[in-house]
Length: 193
Image (cartoon, rainbow, N blue to C red; front, side):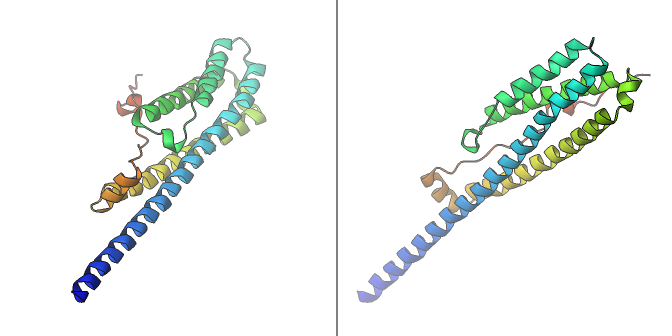
């Protein structure tokens, strides 16, 4: 009788240690995902902070391109109004966030294309510096998104594995969405000569 009580007690202790360990693992991995998400937001904010300087520089050379300049400012405004915390990340909200950021990228592309029509603008040091900073920021955004997806993958795998998924379900740890390619980027661009 005493031996069976010790066995049951041992099983309960092992199960409790496993539960605590699994819970703490989820907490640690969720914090990695949160940190990765914060890095993504930081890089997008860096891009948003560069845009007014770029717009003002272009405005000085190409004031009559006001439609494009307004589109860039409007896209930036919309993108900065879409803020998500990690707890709010759902596939739908992630798609909304990505759509707003893609609009900024598209508007910036049109703005940079305008510079081709203005040799003085292309030659301006501050415009070139801003372009280099923007290019670097776009690379940082890509890396931050990749890091976020890797962190989300590790977390999502842990949340789904048996028997840890039982602990995850009990404590409300749910899968996090990934950054995915925009619909426009899935089709190859047409090159016409």
